[in-house]
Image 1 (cartoon, rainbow, N blue to C red):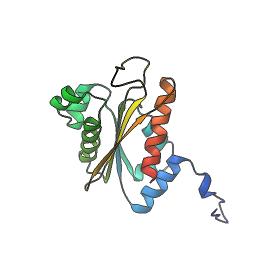
Image 2: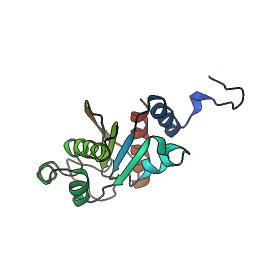
Image 3: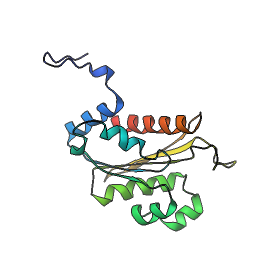
Image 4: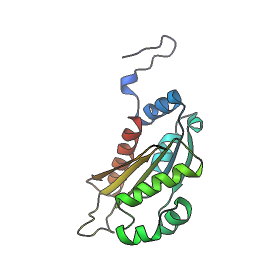
Length: 165
């Protein structure tokens, strides 16, 4: 544990958003997010920290496919072929939101929070999270359990963990 004599802070017990804040501030990196199934929860958690505007520049809730196409540059043919809840769409969302303000990182989340909207191949709880930099884009697939709010919270927590690393 690390303590500061004037303001004792235990680094090991920091909240995820505080860890993200610290990492981005120390590296002087910037972030933009494109959220679908999380509906802005990631942006909400990040902006609860005073000073987050030093790194968090943009958050878009692209819930409808038209928003994904018009604002984030997702290809209509990609949506038709793979669906909104897919690795290729998550990739394009993260790349698209990063390019809007030329941030260092773009984060996207797309998934099925339920209770409806699922199919045999895409069950409730299926979520894709992508992180894009100028060098590469990484997409991870998750299957979360629980009700709608639990899935949204778990996806948000997982996305923040990915950013903190």
